[in-house]
Length: 196
Image (cartoon, rainbow, N blue to C red; front, side):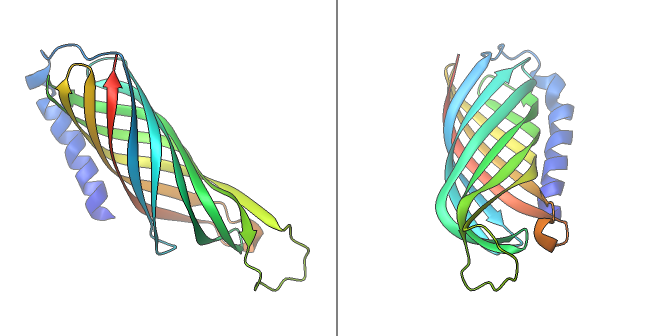
């Protein structure tokens, strides 16, 4: 995880150093929308998730943008959350800032986007023995923070190819008697988009 954070820090420093060199690039289109594939490694659960998502970006300037995405991970996975083993699908929403340097053909950015990971309604593991009545289904929403880097290519003024690398930090709230803990998880995304 230190390598990911080091990469994000290096990217941010590189962006601000090179910012003056490409300040004369064409003004970027104001709105970007796109779709992507995403991979999320849940390090504390020792599982990998693949999903799809949509993204929207509002470019405030050539160097700063409001950036958000919503991801869906369709495969049911088993996770131990809030004191129970839960078989469920996951959803993720993130909204924050993307800042960096942009040329006419390439952009390099750092990102910091708070949001959530929702472990959707799923069934509890029937092998769990409990003296307390529990519902037949269970769901959980946890705070998440996406910190990392973004690399973009602009094949034309109206299209973008984007690669994200980040650390998705999830804060599990410790309901159900489980201690609170923070999980660092590698997330990679690759997608395409339109710019208006």
